[in-house]
Image (cartoon, rainbow, N blue to C red; front, side, top):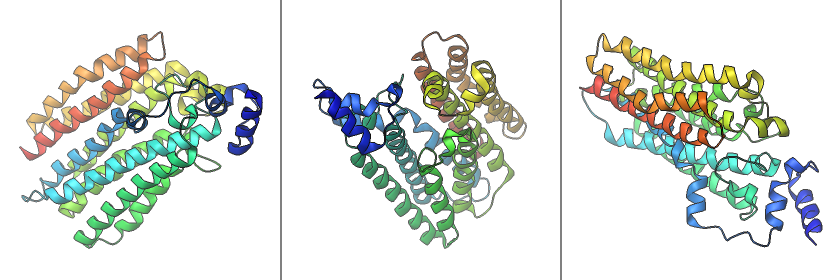
Length: 324
């Protein structure tokens, strides 16, 4: 009976006959699989990655205050809603897309909903679409408030990019382009967009902050992909980490942590409080240490969380420097 369930699930979701790609089927066939809980859904939202959505909005808002003395807190909070909803939406979309491909069959980190077989792929997809919808509504509200109608196109591109990270026939996340798109959208677009909608200008400080935020977001992705490197190789997921290997990933991760601190030092020549951004290394330093010395891939989950906190601390101190 178990084998018939596996066969049926494989036909339904297109899971390969490769044992490494039967995560959905095997979990679904297990008679001991526990019911899904609210905690499982919250876990699938991957809250530890949310600082990556908050950081560019914080930096962008601080940069906007360099141009205008008015704190547009409603617009800032709406930008935050867009960023957080997009982040959660892409997390659910990744859960769905990786799950139906079988990529998460031997996942090292926290279990995914789709791969566990305890939630239907359709339910996870609906969750992703709901959060994309929330981001779209908030983005439309910003567009109406600012009358910058071309923002609608930017928003549409952001949602399309979020989906095709692991979705579609040729997801760019499977072809070593994840870091490029993360840098562009979680660094440049999110930070500069936040600044522009509040100030209708882009000071150079916003660009420096956007680069720093983007590099730290890429560092989080590298930690995630380093944790999954062996599994990704087995299932043919060609992340940048798979292509360049562990050592170069460790080097690149270190650079992505250190370079934003160099930007903070540069900004400190004009905004002395920016020196305090180096305190973010209290989290970033241990993350680097873990990435270089880990023995169990599960240790990299901690490195990922610490890197996210580094991003948030970095953003907070730059906001203080710009707004102080």
